[in-house]
Length: 295
Length: 309
Image 1: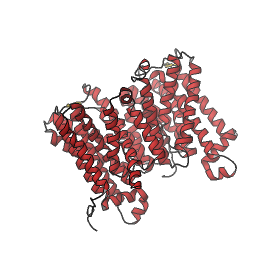
Image 2: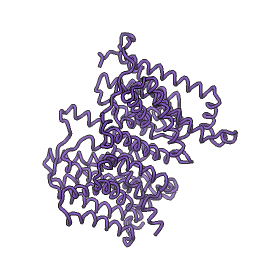
Image 3: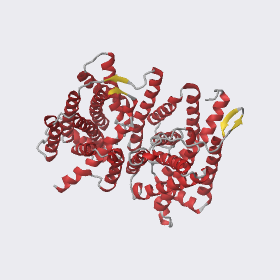
Image 4: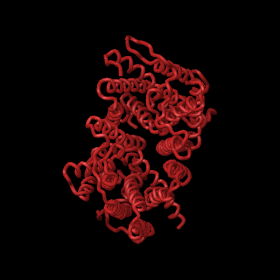
């Protein structure tokens, strides 16, 4: 990669951090509102990448259209999961078990369609999503891909949009009401089940958005969802479950750690170091660094 | 306090089913020497032991372990290193591999078993993933591409070893599940706080179940490594964590017979069918089955058989 200087470390860490914030806030939002840890969160990220890959390379659609269609697609899947699989009065544990099972279904479905004797024409393994925003810009003398910058811009845009939705709209008020007290929300005429389904669709769009711009720089294979799920879980737990500010801080923390390991130690150890940090935090302080109480 | 393993009633439909399954897996050698069929039944035994190991901890105590690949891989690596570096005979390497997995399990279990519910699930899921990441890194540093080579080039030895471990695991776990120890473990599943309030040291019993689970998962991991000829980071892969869960859910969790039925059905039927499309889709079929069973038949096959009979 680029020559590692303290400035390049800071710039690259920050660019990655913004994307991590989006990735983990979606996971956190769904937990806060529905009390659901979505085990299929990473699988949705993976499916977004594959949908964009298929639309771009197989059907030759333009990048913005492919991304839009892919996001609609994963939002529908997430809504379906929430309504028919994780919903219906399941406990957090049952919902996690079922969504993990669904994540396996998605992974093996993609694996089957991508490379099997049934669809020989689709066999391209692993998949590479072409770079769709060319060029790079110089920030403080550090060269950063334009697509990364676009990812940051879009992430900030989506986060602001979610923030405005949560604080300024009727839907946002319902979401916050359900997250505070489901029964009371139902009493004033909100349908909690529907709100949770909408929230899970919103969370899927957040996962998907954070994935599409990065897809060009990583190999896309059916198992990438797991490292994304563990990353989102790590950030949300270290930040404290349900704490929005804690999640933002933890997201940047993990982004800087990843960047540091990537630049100075060994790229292969990036996942390992963040997992180790998570395990230590879980054992020493399960409520997270910024969490309020033990669960 | 009476002994924990006393008064096990062996005359039951469950136990006869277990004996029948051991006879079924063992009878193959008497009928055919075709390496393909021996291989399929070896795999059924291997996955059967993994599923049983999952059930004795997670099925009985309700602590859902999504990281059985950790003791599986740890046992495999221990045995492979023993056999290549110290020329240990395979049988001893397999046993020590199991003990090694218990040792590593003490490290992870002492910490992770303090966590409840979804935290336990996520931490167990993470531990083998982190280990595989580290081993992948170690491989590139080391210069060896695949891992630790250790082949036992003897189909019958592998087949007999996995069958023996399967039989011992099935009978031991049946005895555990139907003893006072099993009652204690089930009380943890039903209500851990209530069990503690009755003076039961739940952490101790959880560790016992965890160690038993790791011991057999580790031994069968060693057999798997010897049959493959190499211990590699893929031994810590998701598949070895996920398939046992699928099999237990299909057969019926917490029943000991359930995982046996599940492994014979999933591993056996799909491998023996030898139809290309189904071969490719076997994991997809398994995952779909898991989802449907969890949604509509949470007690699994054995749960429904028992209720009907």
